[in-house]
Length: 303
Image 1: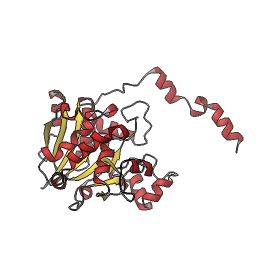
Image 2: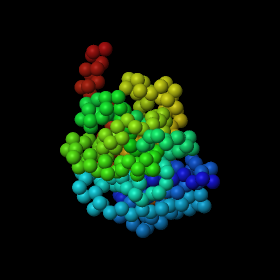
Image 3: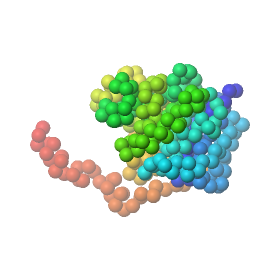
Image 4: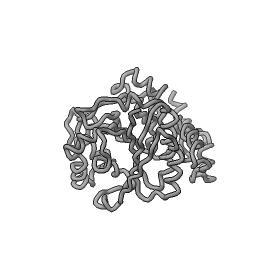
């Protein structure tokens, strides 16, 4: 069986979430064989063993690729951390034709066969369009007016083409010269350098919009009714974007229970959200009308 090469990037702070993503991948792809490349810095030996326990199968092999954060001292990271840059090392560390890169804040909900088998011989990557990048942002990145902007949390990468055209070095150069204007440093730089030379995938392969199909003119304009329907009813990969993740007590994502389902199948089970405080419990469980009664009075009087 031909192995699929999957890449994650993490530090020890996010290793639990990587474990959940990995378990969901294996549970929903039992007929596939994997090599899991984990680009990491500071992951403890104990946590490496926990990940290997999740991948304890003849059809799954983990390769830990240790990265030094000092390699990215010149890059701005802010709240995201240096791990977001680790994927720039993929062409240097992984000698495959293509790999599927996945952020750790995802759940694989179905088979990834059709995604992995996409032909990207002529493109740098295959990804899902990110609609939160408006024309002003694309202009600031000096992208071509017709180029679309993709979400980099799920990327099928043409490693050979990245290596041949020195894409990582181009991205580093862009980061160095534009770091003050970047909103999402690595994703902005990826889009600026690749500039439209990527293959568009249906939303179901990176379902990052928790309200798909609900009064979203932007999504209806960019994705077909079929694509929106599939992303809402049968997403292949669910991506928990935003500040509140399923492991946060106050997260309200409609599919957050899937995170806890797969967490229970890992050595990391038993985790309790760190933001379970009395104040947050009151805030989360107080009806919206009690939190801001004037808003509802005004709304009612205008109807």
